[in-house]
Length: 544
Image 1: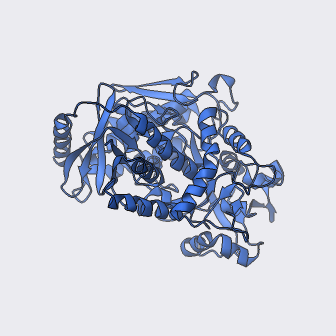
Image 2: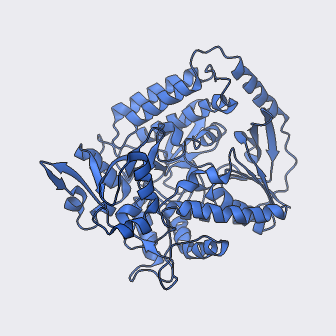
C-alpha cells in the first residue's frame, strides 16, 4: 500500500488526503493545528464553476479565457484548461460531501459576480464558503480515519524534507508535545502549507502561513516560481491583529467604490472603466486606489437591508463588531492589503516539483494564476490540485529502499539545542517585525529598482544575523529555527521582483511601467549555496 505524507490540512491538503484514501492509499496528514484553524476557513467569497445553470453566454472556454487574461497570459493553457473543465464536477462532488451552497428557488446553486470575470459564475455559501467546504472535507476525512486510511498528526511543525539523490522520501518535524524532532517517511510527500503572509506582518490571511516551508525547501534544491506576483485585495479594514477582508461579494452585489472631493462623491472606478468598473481585476482596483491618494469608501447602503443581511451577513457582523459600522446605513472605509500569493513552489502540470515524489498544491504552489488571480479561483485550484496530485501519485513507481533518517534527526536536534543557548539580544519577533516593515515598504503595490535594492540589502543583513537570534523560552522552538527559511524566501521574492523589468498583473514597476513581450513567461528562481539564480521559463518546463 502506497504511503503518502501530506503537510498542511486546509482545503488543498484535505482534498488530496480524501482523494488518496479513495484510491486505497495510506495517508498521514500532518499540521501544527486542526483544519478548522486553517487559512481556508477565511475564504469568504466563493468558488468558480460554469455549471449547467450558468448565465446565458457563459461557457467553460470563457472561464478559461478569463483566467488566462486575468493572469496576463503567463499561466499554462493546459493547466488552466484542466482547472476550468473540471470545475463543474468539483461543485457536484462538494455538494455530495454535504457542502451547503446558497441556492435559487429552483434548487440550483446561486452565482455571484467576481472581479475580472465576464459572467456570474462564482458559487457560494453565504459569505463563508471556505468554512463550509472545510467542514464537509473534514467530515469525509474522518470517515477515512475510521477506515484506517487517514492518520492525523497534530501539533507537528515542518523542519525539513528528507531528500537524497533528487528524490523525496519524507520529512522531519518538530513535535510540540515531545519538543524533539521526529521523522515521517513516505513514498510521496505533498506540501499544502498555504501562502507566506508573515513576510508582510498584517495581511488578510493567517500569519501561521509564514512561508517557512517554501523557504526551507528552496535551500534544499526545490525551484520556486513567480514570487514577485503578490495580490493586494483592494477592500480590507484594519484591526489590532490583522487586516480583515471585506469580501469581493460586496461589490458583486452592487457595492460602489468612491472617494470624497470638494464635498462630493467621486466614483473613480466607474468614471474610468464604466459600469463594471468596481469589478475590475484586483490589481487594477488596488492600483487605482493607491493612485488616488485619498481615503476610499465602499458603499452598499443603498441596497435593501434585507438583501444585505441575507447575502452578506458575515460582512455585516464583521464591520459592526470591529469598526462599529452599520453597512446598511454607512459606507465602509477600505484600504488595499496583501491577500494572495500567485507565486510559490514551481510545479509541473501533475503538481510534482523538480524533486521526484515531492508535490505542492494550494496557495504554496504556483501554477494556475499567472500574474494575477481571479477571485473564486483559489478554492477551485486548491481542490483540483489535490485531486491531480493524488492521481499522479497513484501512477508513481515507489519501489525504493528504506530511507535512513538518522543524519537529519541528529542535525535537527543539534539545531534546536543551539537555539536555546544563543546569547543574542535580539528576539525572533523583533526581526520578523523588521522584515514585515521592510517588505511592506519596498514590495508594495508600486515598486522601483531603488526600493527593491534597499529591500534586498535589508533582508541580506537580517539573514547575516539570523543564526544568532535567540527565541524566548515561552515561544515554540519553531520560531527560532524557522527564521532563516522565512528570510531566505523574502530575499528570493525581492530578487524575483528585481529581475522582472516590466509591469504585468500584480507586479507594477514605476520605472518599467510597460508590459514587455520579452517577459511573457514565468520567473523561476533557484538557490545554490547562498546564491540566487533567476530565469524565465520560456520553454514551459513547469506547467504548459
